[in-house]
Image 1: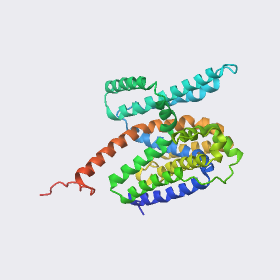
Image 2: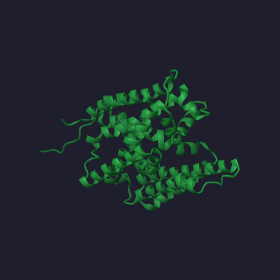
Image 3: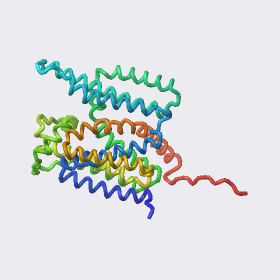
Image 4: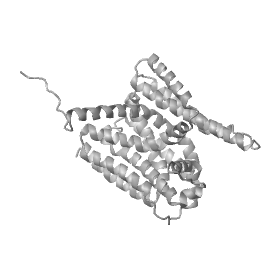
Length: 352
C-alpha cells in the first residue's frame, strides 16, 4: 500500500506519543541514545538528500560556503579550546574572557551561516549576495554589545530551534500544502506535548546513573542551564539538572524534541524519497552510520567529537531549506486567506 500524506500524519502522531512517553520515563537515557544512534543516520541521509536537491540554493557552489563555516566552527569550538587554551596559571578573569570570546566567535559563524543561507535562497547574482552579507555584517556589529544574540545563535538556534521550531514549521507547511486536518492535529499535539513536558513538574524519584550523568554533563548540560534561565531560575550545579523537578522537566522536553525530530525525518521517507540514491551511496551511508554508532558505544566523548562537525554541518546545510520553507509558508497562508481552505483544482487545457 502506498503511503499518503494523511497516513504519514497519523504515523507521526503515533511516533510523537511514543517519543513523549519514552522521554518522560527516561529523559537522559533517551536523549543520549537518540543523539548517538538516530542522530548520525539523520545527518548522513539528510545531507545526501540536500545534495541531490542542490541544497535549495540559487548558486551551484553556495553550499561550499556553509561547509567552510562548519569547519571554522569546529576549529573555534574544539581545536582552539583543546590545543590553545589559556595557561593553567592564568587569572580567572583571563579564562572567562577567553571563553566569552570563543562563544562570540562561534555565534558569529552561526549567524553568518544563517544569514548567508537567506542570501543563497533569495538572490541569484553573486554581487547581490555579497551586498546582502555586508548589510548583515553591519547588523552584526550593532548586535555585538547585546549579549542575547550570542545566546540565541550559539545555544538555541542549532539545538532546540532546529529540532523543535523548524520541525513545527515543516509540519505546518506540509499540512497547509496538502490541506491535511490530521497534519494540523499533529502540529497541535507537538506543541501541546512540548508544553506539558515543560510545565508538568512532579517530584523527582528516579535515580540517574553516574555514567549517564558524566556523559550528559560533559557535553550537553549547559543547554539545560540556559533553558532554566529563560524560566527565571538557576541550575547552580549540574546535580540540579538531575535532581530538581525543573531540571528533569527541561530534560524531558529536550529528549522529546530531539527524538521526535529524528523520527519525523525517517517517517517521511516515502514522500521525500531520501533513500532513492545509488546503492554505492546507500552503502557508504550505512557503513559510516555503523562506524559512528560503534564509536559512540566505545567512547561517547570520542563519538561526540568525531561527529561534531557533521552535526553542525547538517544544521548549516539545512538553513537554506529553513528559509525557503518559511517563504513557502507565507505563500500558503496568503493563498488560504484569499481562496479558502479547499485547494484549487489545476486548470486543464481545453480539448475543443
